[in-house]
Length: 538
Image 1 (cartoon, rainbow, N blue to C red):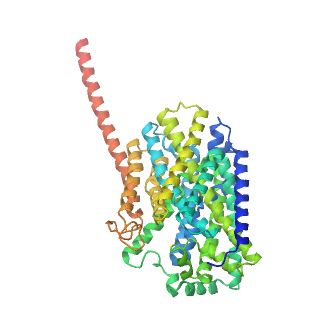
Image 2 (cartoon, helix red, strand yellow):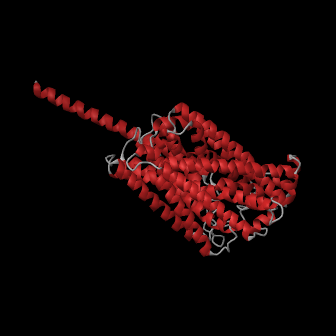
Image 3 (tube, helix red, strand yellow):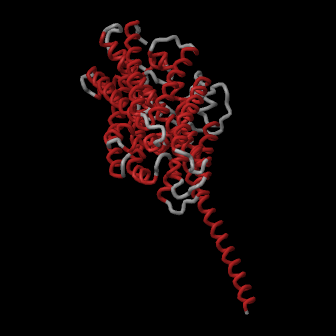
C-alpha cells in the first residue's frame, strides 16, 4: 500500500459524505406513500426500460463482482476470466428464458410467481425461507467486507473496533435506503451506482491500456510476470487446482454461477417493476449490455492489477485480492501525494463505497418484501392485511433483517466468509432456478414438487457446503485447523442442482400418483353407493 496523506483522506471522506447525502435525499424524495403497495414494491411501474435496465444491472453487479472477481483475475488469471464470462452469461440466460414469464406471472415477490397456480400458506412460507436463505449470506459477506475495505480505504488501523464501526454505519444506511426508498428509491441508488461504476472503470481501464501502448499482448505478458506464475496465468487451475477433481469442481462452479446468480430473489424482484412484457425485454437488453461492458472492464482491471501491482503486493494486503482495484488506482495515479493520485484513488474509493451501499440495500429490500408480503400479508393474514399495515411491517422487517445481518457480520468479521457467497449462489441454482423453471414451464408441477424443490435444493446445498473442503480441511478453508469435510468440492452445484430438479420431479410424480389413486378410490365409492341406491329404489 502506498502512502496515504491527510489531504487524500479528507477528500475521500468529503466524497463519501456527499454520496450519502445526495442518495439519502433522493430516497426520501422518491419514497412511496405509506399506504401504496404498488409504489413501494414496483415504483408505480414508472421506470423507462433504459432506467430499469440500469437498475437491474446495478442490482446484478454487487461488490463481490467488482472486488472479488477482479481480485481472482489478478491472482488466478484464466480462472477469473471464465468466472467473469459466466457472470455475464447468467444474465443472458435470465433474459432469454425467464424474464418475460416472470414479469407476466409475478406481482411483487417470488412468492407471487410460485403461488400463481399453487396458492397456499405452505408455498408462501417456503418462498420466504428460501429468499432469506439466499439473501442473508450475501448481506453478511457484503457487510463483513465493508468493514475491512473501508478501514483500508480510509487508512484506519484495522482493529476490530474500527471494522465493527464501519459495518454498523454501512448497515444502518442500508436499512434507511430500503425502508424509506422502496423500489423507486433503491432503483435510483442503483442507477447512480452504475453510472459511477462504469465511468470510473472506463477511466481506470483506459489508463491501464495506455500504460502498455494499447497493446493487449503486452498487458498479458506483464500480467504473467507480475503474477509470478508465468504461462500458468493463462491456464486453468490457479484458483482451485489442476487435478481431475479440481477441474470438475471448476466446471461445477461455472454451471452454478450461470444458473444461480441471475435467479437470486433481489435480481428477479427488479423484473416486476417493468410496465409490460415488451418493456421487460428492452430493460433486459440494456441490463445485459451494461453488465457485459462492465465484465470486459473488470477483465482489464484485474489483468492490470496483476501487471502493475503484482500478486505479492496484493496478497500481502488481502490474500483474496479484494483490494486489487484500489491498489491499482494508487499505482496509476502517479506520485502518492499528487493531485492525480488523490483524484483517481478517491474516485475508485467512491465507486467501491456506492457499490457496497446499493448492493446491501437491494438485498435488504428483497428480504424485507418477502417477509412482509409472503409471510405476514398472505401466510399469516391470508391476504387480508391492509396496505398501510403491510408497508409498516415491510419497514420494520427492513430494520430486523438489517440488524440481524449487522450482528452476524460483526460476529464473523475475522473469518473468511467468502464461502457464504458461494452458498447463496448454490441456493439460487439448486432451489430457486428449478422452482421457477418448473413453475413457469411444466404444467405437471404440483405443490408437493414445489416444496420438495425449495426445501430439498436449499437443504442439499447447505449440508454439502458445511461439509465441503471450502469450510474445513484445507489451508484456505474457513476453519483451516479443523477437518470435518467429506464432500470433496468447494461448490455444491454438481450435486445440489440435479438434486433440486430431481426432488421437484419426484415430488410431482408421486403427487400425481396419489391424486390418481384418490380419484380411483372416490370413483369406486361413488359406483358402489350408486348401486345400493338403485337397488333400494327397486
